[in-house]
Length: 408
Image (spheres, rainbow, N blue to C red):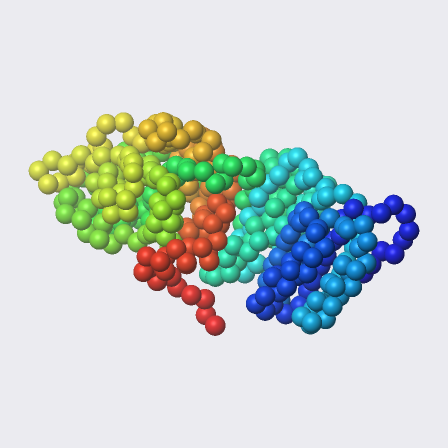
C-alpha cells in the first residue's frame, strides 16, 4: 500500500515484508537500504511457523521512489509481499503507564485472549507488543501494554481472568524485572505437594482430624497459631523416625527444582518460610540450595514427639517479618522481593513483597495477591519474570540437564 497524496515531503518510510522465512532475508533488505543512506529508526521481526513478518521504520530520502522500486524488486526476488507507507516523524513515544501483562492458559483459547485485549482497549491503553513465553506444558504470552496505570489495569484484568479461567499477572515495566531478587516461598502445598502435618498425622492415626483443622486454618476461618497447637498435640507419642519416613515421601511441586535452578543461575536468592517443621524444612533447604529457612520446631524428648512446639509459632505475622529480615540480610529492598504462598497465613508475607503470587491458593488469598498462578507447574513463575521456556531449555542443555519436550 502506498500513499500517493501530494503535500509536504514525508520524512519516514514504514516498510513491511511478509512471506516465507529463509536465511539472508534481513541481510538482503539492509544491503538494499544501505545504498540509499537511510537511518534505521525502528525494527521489529517475528517468525511464526516459518512465516516472517519484518517491519522497518527508516528515514525517507528526498527522492524515495527509487528506493521503493528497489524494495519491490527485492520483495519479488524473495517471493514476499511488500507494503510501504510514507509518513512524518519517528514512532510516537510510548505513553506513561507501561506494564507487562503475562497470560497463562491450559489451553489458552481465542475467546479469552479477545476478552483480555478488549478490557485493555476499554481503558484506552495500547498493546505495543506480544511475545510467546511458553507453549508447553502451558501456553504463556507476554503483552507489553502502555497508556494505563498498572494497578488500575491489574484490578480490571483480575476480574476478567476469573471470568475466562486463565491466570494473569500485571507488573510495571521497569528495571526491577531484570534485577536480582529474593524469592520467599511457603512450603506446604506450595513448594511441596500436600501438608507435612497431615503426613505425620497419618503415621499417628489421626489424619482426618488434622486435615479438617488444617483446611479451616488455610481458609482463614480459625486462628493459625491455636490450630497448630491443637494439631501438634495430636502427634504426642509419635516416634521421631516418622519424620524420616515423611521426608522420604515428600513430592516437590512440578517445576520447583527448575525454578530454583534457573533463578540461582541469575543470582537470585531463595528463602523458605514455613508454618511446618524445621526438622524437615532444614533438610529440604539443604537439598535445594535454599539460602534461608525458618519454620516451627517440634519438641522431641527420648525419641518421641511431645505434642508441643519449641519457641514462638511461625504464624502469619512472623512470615512477613521473616521476609523483611531475609531481604535485609540479602541486601535486597523489600520491593524487589517475590513471595509465593497458598494459605491465609501467607497473606501478610504476600502483601509485604514487591510481587505476591498466590500459587494454587485458596480464594481469599487469590483475591488479595498481586498475581495468581493456578496451573500445577511452579516454573510458570519464570514467565512472569520475563524468562521464556526456550531460554530455560537452552540453558539446561548447556549444563546437560534434559528438559521434557512437547509431544509432536
